[in-house]
Length: 186
Ligand SMILES: [Zn+2]
Image (cartoon, rainbow, N blue to C red; front, side):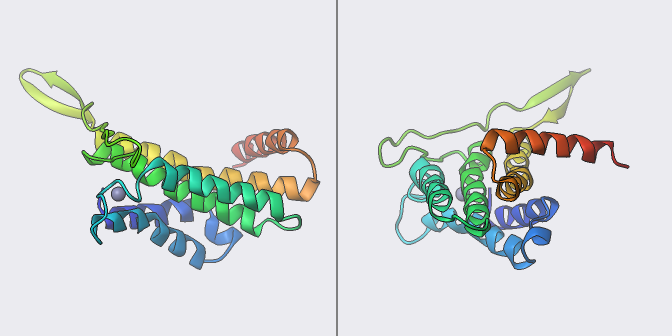
């Protein structure tokens, strides 16, 4: 997908995930900008959708930052939450590109195999006319939205854990209760 789409959609999704309430209006803006960074590999003589779109840069690198934040941030949640947001916006970028671009080299430099999920448009044929039901692009946007919506739940999870000083399992249970009570509220 194009750079502007990554920027705009990430911005809207992070606002919807209330990132601006928990942090500051600058946070969704900065992370929307971060979401466009992998596309720098189209320039500077790098491998397009390879050098900065691969699993090492967009998955393992931000995952290591989360691990470091959880290991070293003993008090407070700022770096834990920032590293989670960083992870979500980076990990979702190539996944959207799988559905909308033909050439994500996801395992670069280990393999030059392209990941391509652009071919499963679902159409309905009625009396010789075709009506599109699902295109791979819209399916990609759906997956992108789901991943970015994770920002809301993961940030809440970290906050519950910090507040209660209990384990991950306990915090997950509390988050489930909280979501159920939000759903019951008008
Ligand atoms: Zn891209």
